[in-house]
Length: 456
Ligand code: C2O
Ligand code: CU
Ligand code: CU
Image 1 (cartoon, protein in one colour):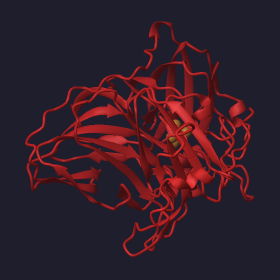
Image 2 (spheres, protein in one colour):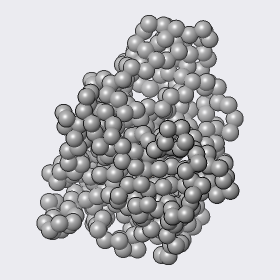
Image 3 (cartoon, rainbow, N blue to C red):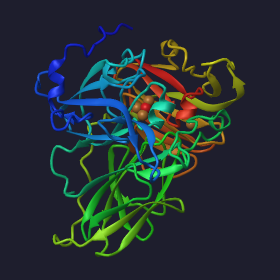
C-alpha cells in the first residue's frame, strides 16, 4: 500500500499562533487561524504528571493531558484534526469505534505510514454515529497507551437529548510504582494469562477522586475503559442508574443492575439520578472504590429521565441470507518466537494464526474476506480460561446470542468474550478495507491475538 508523502512540520510558521503567546503554552488543542485544512491541532508530547502525591510520572500526553484532552464533535459532521507528533517515537491515532474510511483508521502499514517524530498527519472524517468513543495510538501500544496516550472522543447527538449534565469518566490503571515510575507494561507470564495489570486506579487521571454532581438531576455519565488490561466490574451500590448506551450505541434504557463488566476499550453510558444534597455514592470496581459521587446542592430542582437516545444509522444485518464465519480464540502454549531483542512472544492465536507485531506484512494475509454489502454471522469462540474484549475496526456489529448469558441484541464495536464462551454476532460488511480485529487486552493483542479482516 502506498502512502502520501511524509508531512513535515518545517516551515509551518503559522502553527504557533493558537495557544502560544500567553506565557508560551507548550501544549494545546485549539482552533487554528487557517480553518481551510483542519479544525483542531492535537499534539502528542511528553508531560510530567503527578499521579502519586509528591511524585512525578513521565507520562505521554495528548493536548497537555494524560488521559488526553477530550475531543467533541457533532454527529454527521466532519472532524478534522491535525495531529502533531512531538514524541521521540513514531505513532499514529486510531479512532476507536468510529466508522470511517480506512485511510483515517490509524493502523501503521495498513492505513498509513507511522507519524515520525516532528511530523504531522491530518485526520479528516465524518462521524456518522453519536456516542462515546475514544482515540489511541496503534503503534507500540503497550507502552504508548500505558504512558497515557488515550483520550475520549465524544460525538454529540444532532438534537438535544434531554441530558443537561454530561460527565466523562476515563478509567485507567497506571503501571507505576510508589515513586510514580513506570513499571513493565507487559510481563510475559502475565501476557500469557489475563494481561499485565497496572497498580494505581484512576478516574480522569486522579486516584479515587470525588466528583460533585447536582442533587436531584439526572446526569449522563460516560464511563470509558481506556485501560491496557483491566476489565472493570462496575457497580454503584444504592444508586438509581440506568444504562442508556453501550460502546457508543444507544440501548433501551434499563437499570444498571448489580454490576456491569466493562472490558478494555468498552464504554457504558449511564443516566444517574443524583440523590439529595449531602449524599454520596461509590463508583466501584467489584469491592474497590474508583470514585465518590457527591450530591451538591442545586437550585434547578429535580430532573426528569430523558427518553432513549436516538439510534445510530447502522445497517441491520440480513440474518436470513447471512453467511457464517467462525473465529476461535485460543492459547497457543508458551511458544516463544525468539529471545533476542525485539522478538515477540506468541501466546495467542485466532484460528490457529498468531499476529506478529514485528512483521509489517501480517495484514496482507487476512483471516477472512468479506464481500462488500453482504451480511455475515460471526461465531466467536473462546477456547481459553481468560476473557477477551474482541474489537473490530471500521464496522459496528450486532451481538445476537451467547451460550453464557442472555443477550438483549445491541450494536457494538467490542464484545467481552468470557472464559470458554461462544457468542454470535452479525454485521453488514459495508465498509471496504482491511480492518483490524483483535483483543483489546493490549498484552494479548501484542502476543498474537490480532488479525485482519478484508472487505472487498
Ligand atoms: Cu481501540 Cu485496534 O483498537
Ligand atoms: Cu478500534
Ligand atoms: Cu485477550
